[in-house]
Length: 176
Image (cartoon, rainbow, N blue to C red; front, side, top):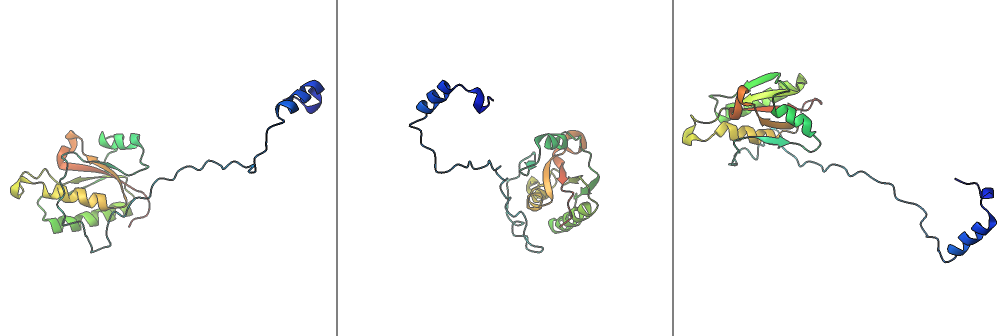
């Protein structure tokens, strides 16, 4: 940038003439850019013993796909492709819903205490259930959605259970 003394007087006069009708603004400060914060997630689970959503009937998709805001797409894709191996497995086959709920809660708590990153839950496809409905699969879907430490989950790859199992990505922060 040229110094004040480097600008000829004629150009200064020309500039002053061009700017003579310009008025200065009252506010001489520009507001800084603020990054928008990610929306706060709604509460996902009720207090212990108050499983308010447990009795709702939800149409569960055959393939699970869920990730919380802020979870990188690439990380989720790695989970779905089986590139993040499960460190522990919970098998809910043959359990009643109440037993499965207790086992799920214990498993989740233990997995968080051990700071596991990825776990697998085998819920089955529901072919042997009454009405041929995947009861445990539906309940697992609901429980995962209600669990705050669950960052993402997806149907397991075909070679590791397919639609009868779910890969779950957990937060490594302190447990519930």
